[in-house]
Structure formats: C-alpha cells, structure tokens
Length: 480
Ligand SMILES: [Zn+2]
Image 1 (cartoon, rainbow, N blue to C red):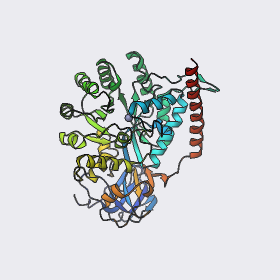
Image 2 (cartoon, rainbow, N blue to C red; image 1 turned 180 degrees about the vertical axis):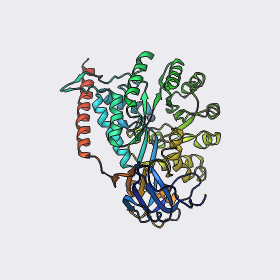
Image 3 (cartoon, rainbow, N blue to C red; image 1 turned 135 degrees about the horizontal axis):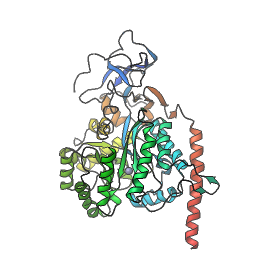
Image 4 (cartoon, rainbow, N blue to C red; image 1 turned 90 degrees about the vertical axis):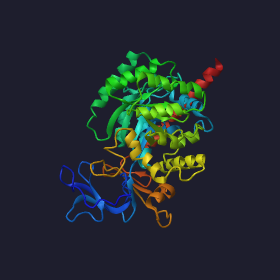
C-alpha cells in the first residue's frame, strides 16, 4: 500500500465556496494502492470532491458546513452494477423457488401494474438503496413484460376504478430515480420483444426523453438489457449489437444464471460472440455456469462480468467461479440484484455473501481478500460500467458520494485493521450517514429528503390492488 497523499488539491469547486468540509475521518478512499488514513475531505459547490488528504483541512479552508466525524470511517457509497429497482415491494415471494419459479411469482403480480405503480415501486427501491448506502445503481427497467408472456396493462388503458397515467413505463422509472436522488445508469428492456421497428421506436422515444437529463449529475447514461438468455435465435444477438452500435449504448445481459438447461444456455454464448457483441461495453450478468472456452473468449474480448452473490444464493443459482474469472483477466463488479431476490438491500451482507461463498467453495480463506471484494462493490463496479471517473472511490474530481460508518456504535471493539473491520464486522447498524454530492440523504435508517409515509401508503395501496387483481385472475382461470 502507498502512503497517504502529502498534499491536497484545490480547496473549492468552480463556484468558489465549498459545500462541506469533513474533518477527523478515517478515510477508506479505495483509490487503488492507497491505505486507510486519518484525514479530511472538502466538497465543492458542484457536489464533487474538491480536495482530500491527511490531517486537518488547510488553514483558511471554509465551507457552508463542517462535519466532524470524530474518527469514524468514511468510505465511498456502494455501486450496485446490477439492479431491478421496481421489484423492491415484491420481497419474500417465491421464497423457496429457483429463478423461473420465483420469476413466475413476480410475474403474476407485475402483469397487473400500471406505469404509475412502477414509478412508486422504483422510487421505493431507489430510496431503500440510498438509505442502505448504495448511492449509484445500474437499473434494469421494466417495460410491461418480464419475458414470461404476461403483459401488463398498457398506456391509456384503465384498471378497475382508476385511469392509467399516460406516461410510459420507462420514463416513469427515470423520473423515480431522479426524484429519489439516486445516481444511475438506466438500462432499457428489450421485452416485450415485438418487431425490430417496434423496439426501435421505443428506444428512440426513451432516448428522446432521457436527453433532457443529459447534463443532470444523477443521470449517468443509458444502456440496453440483453435478452439472448431467453431468445430463440441468433438474430436476437445481432439486433442487440445493431442497437448498441447505432445508439452508442453499453449492454448488460443476464447470462448463465439458472442451473437449468445449462448446455442450451452455454450454446448461446456463440450467438453473442458471432454477432460481434463482446467487448469492453458488454457485461455478462451472473455468468455462473461458464466453460473454460467461454471464459477464455470473454477475457480475450475485454467483456466484463457482474456478480450477484446474495441473489445467486437465495435462488440456488450457483456460485460464479470468481477466482478463475479473475485469473483469466476478466474485470468483475458486484450488484445487489433486485430487492425481490436479494430481499434485503444490504451491501455489507452482499460483500460477505460474496467472500464467504468463494472461500467455502475453495476451502481457502486466502482465495479472495476483504479488500478485493470491497473493490468489486465500489470502484470495480464503476469500472465495468464505464463510470470510474465519476464514482467508486474518494478522489478529487469525483462525486462526493460517501458513507459515515461508526464501528464503535454499536461497538465492534477496537479497530485493528480498518478495512477488515469495515468488510467483516460492520453492517447497516453501523451506517450512520449517507451523503450524495455532499448532501445528507439518510441519517441512520431515516431518509432526510423524503416523506416515507407517502411512499409506503402509495406502495401498499397499489400492491393491495395488484393482489386483488391476481386473485380475480386465478378465480377466472379456475372457473374457465
Ligand atoms: Zn438481474
């Protein structure tokens, strides 16, 4: 590990006055090669880190606010490189099912949603991420079909007793994340599949909507959600590549997740390869049931993988062979997956699920380090998403998205190794404050900028309606 930096950079953002000075922090910057050190952090008026360094802030440094954290840990906000925020109110469903059984349980409720339902569900998920210390997410959005053939109610239709908001699903979810205050990549769903022209019209509509936020600091970029895992022919891979190239979009595809029909899934790797999809702007989500050849070709292409350890354990999907993927040179990030199959938005739990599953698989505690698994959920995740210049570590010029974690409250005992204590001994109970762009967004488990009772009421009311609709659908099916 290198020594802490000796000097600080400029003292304030471009507007002059700094937004915040953090003093007496035990900084886990997670900058590669930099060990934890006692220091300070200055947030500019633009919400970015203007300066960070050891010891006290330079004499004369001023800011709107000063936060003395009295030796607590200050670390970057977690990055979830793979999430489905709209599924937040669907936890506990399919509790003992593998992927497709669980998905069926989700589908039966989602089939009755309106875009406005999905807005509130996505807001619920985004706020829960923020409260849990996840400040940036790659979000697979919902377009009215989860690929099971059950369509949601479309734009302009009505449900019993209510008129559907005219705003489409995709736009509603962008709005929800902006309203929540979560930094995000918005991943466009290719289902419902339809014709290529129909999908492209949807893409163009969403890109036109998103373009108004192109300079918004929370909106990082658009992506597409690859769907070859559920497709029937290579044309689906060619279509994804055409959209990627034409609109300059990265692609994250769920792939080799389920332990069912593995040879059939593995054969589809050639579809992506032969269509020219693989490269640094392509991520395989899950990527559990790989073969040596798949790993070799993925590494050679520069494509990345995203690991969802809690979800993979909950659904019995398997354990991605991280040491082998890493050895091959594949870049790795971690996601929390959706809150319906991870159930608890806890990045600390996710870190330990990751670490322990691999150590147990290999019967070797040295096979994966605490530092590396933390890297996968922060800067590593940002790297595979192509946003490492903005988030993932605490460095001058990046967004001031950070967490204040107190390992002494509740008390975990003396801190011998700050990074090991952070990964192995801390949890949500130690997470005291969450900052996005130097602004406090959560204190303890309490959101500081939203009325949770409103969100809860909306979600509960809407979910009750969906449950009634599902029950009525089951009754109709029985009578028929
Ligand atoms: Zn997923």
